Image (cartoon, rainbow, N blue to C red):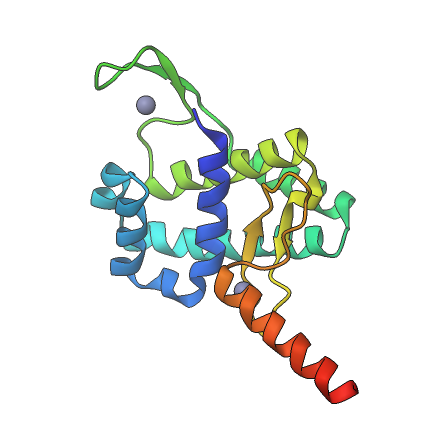
Length: 175
Ligand SMILES: [Zn+2]
Ligand SMILES: [Zn+2]
């Protein structure tokens, strides 16, 4: 199981914002990330549950960006209790036996377990400072910093260049 791809799912859910309420957008995201079975089974109830999860995941990123490690850990531990993992050994599509975090059940539960385990894995393997919030205001998108020197500040290239232009203009005004 690839927990980093699950951590990316947490980022994607947070950054969807209110688009998450649109079943077409969420279905498209699930299909793009290879979760076709989840996309096909998605219901209105799943979407409501995922909207609540998104708010809680956003709080985790905000606390991480503020350097409040204890709060990040407390929030993730709370989420781990509410979304317990039910691992299953699976061997589909000619692949060797491997672990799936969860089988069956509601789509929202499976996605919640995955996102929370993904973030817990990043925090314990790489550190809380690998979770961040984009610093190109007014953007508040979440990101995962997987750079070797922990230098990431923005959610995207677009936000990075927007911030650079703003900094350049500010310097020019100051000169
Ligand atoms: Zn599999
Ligand atoms: Zn951004």
